[in-house]
Image 1 (cartoon, rainbow, N blue to C red):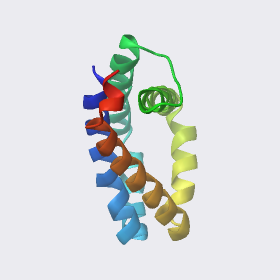
Image 2: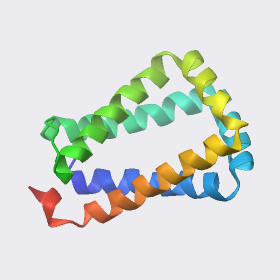
Image 3: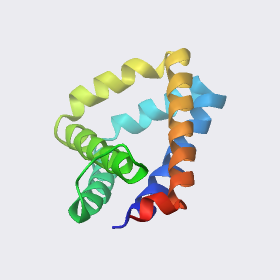
Image 4: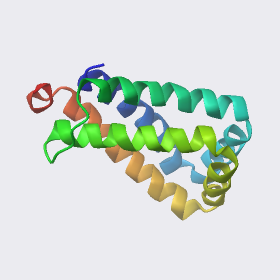
Length: 131
């Protein structure tokens, strides 16, 4: 998979999750709590993103300080996170649920997710990533 496609998919996802966390952090936290309790949903979703990350990394797994290198670093982080969530769901669920009722943490995660999503969408159209 090319980096542009990965950027668009993950960028849209991050914005889709980030904006509700910014606007209604506790309501989004309750939704996240419900989603985290669904083991099959959690594992399936993580498997999908693990596949996306591996598809990116099979082309080139090198990381760097340029846009393409940072996107590959994000692909590595995505792969590791998804493996943890697939294999150690109880531990991952406990850590995630700790955040869900704390509006300041949820709002901070919303800012981070939205900013990352916007950056990924900006980078997806960049000439710098097509290297």
